[in-house]
Image 1 (cartoon, rainbow, N blue to C red):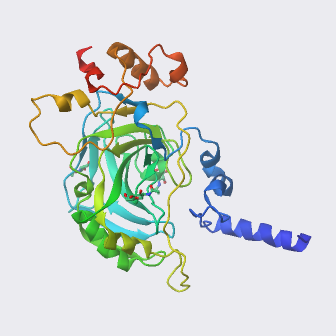
Image 2: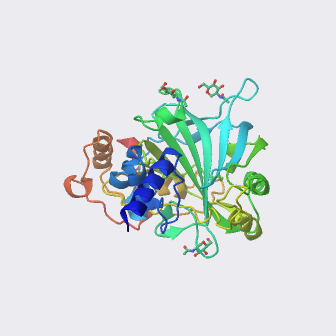
Image 3: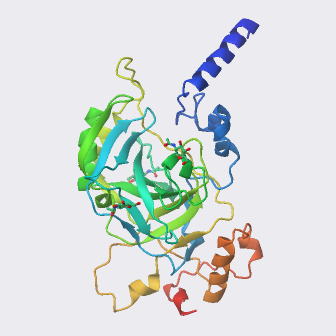
Length: 357
Ligand SMILES: *[C@@H]1O[C@H](CO)[C@@H](O)[C@H](O)[C@H]1NC(C)=O
Ligand SMILES: *[C@@H]1O[C@H](CO)[C@@H](O)[C@H](O)[C@H]1NC(C)=O
Ligand SMILES: *[C@@H]1O[C@H](CO)[C@@H](O)[C@H](O)[C@H]1NC(C)=O
């Protein structure tokens, strides 16, 4: 490369960065996931972070924690706008005097209240599935991520995303089915209005809670934003059951484009997922309790279990100690150091009711 063209390249990089350089999910491109950490000094976690998301949810790492509550999402109609960011379709949630903020409470939130800010949508294309979180290696066709910030501690999403206990993310996996979940169908229809980058569409009738499947079961872990700057401030909640989309509706999402309307090109947003990251020694807690589900007192027809808890020790007290230990953030290598042996028990009878201890 000649000095002149090298100078030009530097100039281009500098101007691109100054002009909010368009990062992308395309691994082949400058601006792709392996470069995110180099594109901006505030994005260093994308490269160096140890608690990154998404992850592969491995059933054998799940620990039953009876202290975590069901997640509550306000059952209201949200003020919302649908936008094509050039990287993904996103629903931005607002609030005004007529429509209050949508809050998330309960869950593993330790009593904090989180305000829903946006729903990020990740989807695949053709044979490539597009969910970010995978379950035991399986990638789902789509994932909806409801991202909320801690409004007890912070005044806005961007400052919360850089601060402790700042963000909560609910992940809803989407599988192909014969029908499309109603709220997802509304969004699917609206995709035709945001075909190009920066196009927006006001959504008048969106009720985010209706995207949740019929289950209170989830898995939770501490991770990061899955787009730049990959801040490690996100408490993730992966709902234990997918919702559905019909194949013909799934194809609508594949049509969305990266380019602005005045420079149409055929590059699609899909597939737009980040690869999974190492789990290291994080804790993967769940409220899925097989024993409860087996007892006769449970007469409600329960939805099919989507994945199963296995790694439960026989000594509940040890789990409780371990959970508390981890909460204090010292359990960096709990697999090696802590006294309990996480058996891979296939027998459901050995799941402990920790609330007894
Ligand atoms: C959500 O919380 C805010 C306070 O942070 C409150 O003003 C608002 O009314 C709440 N929303 C609902 C639906 O209760
Ligand atoms: C993609 O999702 C479909 C529908 O759930 C599934 O049948 C297929 O096995 C998935 N593909 C991969 C590679 O995980
Ligand atoms: C977010 O809050 C911080 C701290 O209160 C403030 O400095 C910043 O300007 C706010 N950002 C936006 C976009 O409102």
